[in-house]
Length: 221
Image 1 (cartoon, helix red, strand yellow):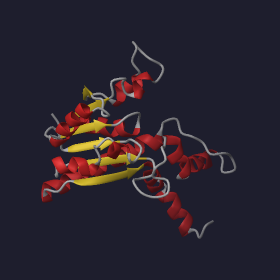
Image 2 (cartoon, rainbow, N blue to C red):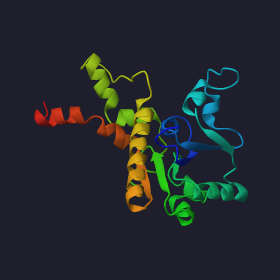
Image 3 (cartoon, rainbow, N blue to C red):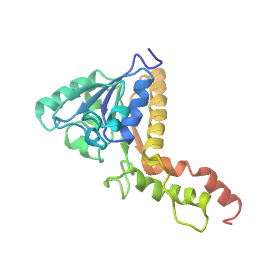
């Protein structure tokens, strides 16, 4: 039981960024159905393995149901669309354009379920000069200035420093959850679904707001 126990989420995510988002939704009570390829999601094999399974995979995929689908096969796509038809939320974090190539893009899903909330999570968003580039946590953290700010805390004259955890994945995952909850509230009021575009870089820049404001307020000093 939980505040989202009447919500079904179709989860096409992998590694950290997307699975962290859907993990939180599952913790809040949503029925999360994780879709994996026949060879398994890549995080299953992140070392060290315990009993043949990665603790990383176990952590990020707790409280979820699972289904194996070959999305490149017509039958796999058919089943995926049928699940999407019966879901409230779809979350994916493939490189932009991948879901469209599979016939599972927002417009494809919207045709069978106009009320769907479709969250697309990526490094640099669905449009713009970097949109087609893959991304991992260090890229968003470095490009946003996050590592530079962390280094300044230790030594303003020293190098950028990476924190212990992968903030470039985990923090955007939280922003994605906030966006999905807001979209659910909007749908409750209007009946409308929507496409959500969550970019790692945007989220990490947003979290440097205090430092940016201090810099601007002090005229660049």
